[in-house]
Image 1 (tube, rainbow, N blue to C red):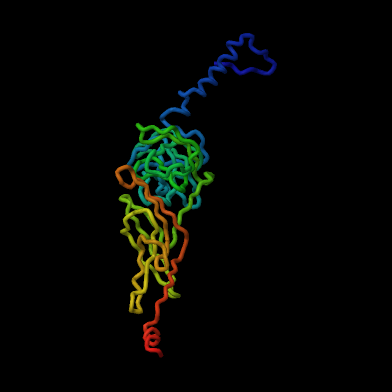
Image 2 (image 1 turned 135 degrees about the vertical axis):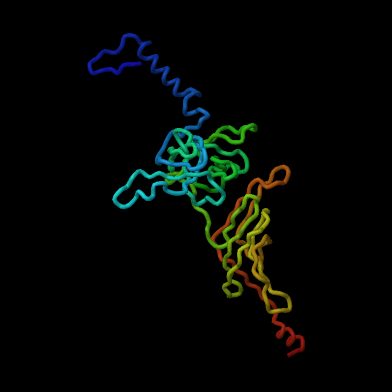
Length: 305
């Protein structure tokens, strides 16, 4: 151990006893064996650390989990403000609106307390396949507990990731997330919002249609088979009648009777199976305008009247 120098004391005469330990310590910090680079993934910069509790599951250091509530909520009575403890669980499908955090310091076992960072820089596991190629954003992957996958937008901004290996399911990555991430933590939540289920079935929410001046509600469609193309609100005038077909949401070529409300991009593997689905949609109200010759006018014209 190097003793600290005191005011007025002379420098040690032996360079090897004074300088060499400093060089050795510096080399140790920068060596691949340093904790910063260990495979145990320890987040090393924290902006916001909170106490967490897991009721039923075990989580490792670096796992991404979702906050489901406040364990000690009854303790906040206006007079007492104890340190908050949040209940966490694995991220599930449909948890896009949850607040996410990364487990730090040590693993958390079922029924135990631990610590997690809700905003800052952390080391995590990033799934190599099934995400959006060349994207710097990531979201929790509900199919791979504790891991992230790349996406068009998301609350996690990827700062660095390890080399891709054909033998590994995931790579380690450094991400920044939370209030200071600079990421795109927004999602469309309006008419015709499209969601993707685990079996790649699409569900389009109800929306609105301005059809020849009539403002209508278009019913939802929860059973759309995913493909690459435009999801449209479709409705047209039935020939030789004065009625319209019921507005429906389905894949179609955009046109006068098919108003696009979302673009769907499917990525498939070598066998033709879907690996990922990306949804792009603006905030819109569908509009359809179609005209037909008036049967009375046509009859009158044909008769010369």
